[in-house]
Image (cartoon, rainbow, N blue to C red; front, side, top):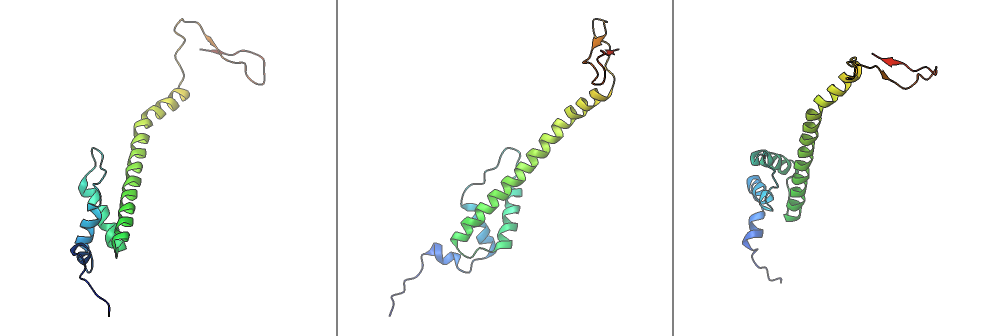
Length: 128
């Protein structure tokens, strides 16, 4: 005959707990690493979606789910950063392409600039 002791309250609470309690435990594992401008509500929404899709059954799964939540948040953060970098550099890129396409004004000294010789001939071309 085995001596069965009651489970500690923290373990007993995990057995048959509601999805809200599981979400609270997953989020409570560590503080969310939010940067300025990021909203805790957005983080909690992602966490809730991942917890409800996975339904962790024990503490180990809850820790693993927390890793998935944090990694998902980091992926979304990097995507936002990449989009921001592309948007901010778009103006410079358009300007660079535009300056290659449009003719340049004459040289400041009023003299024509010389370019490299054309590949087919040895003549120098002048830029107006």
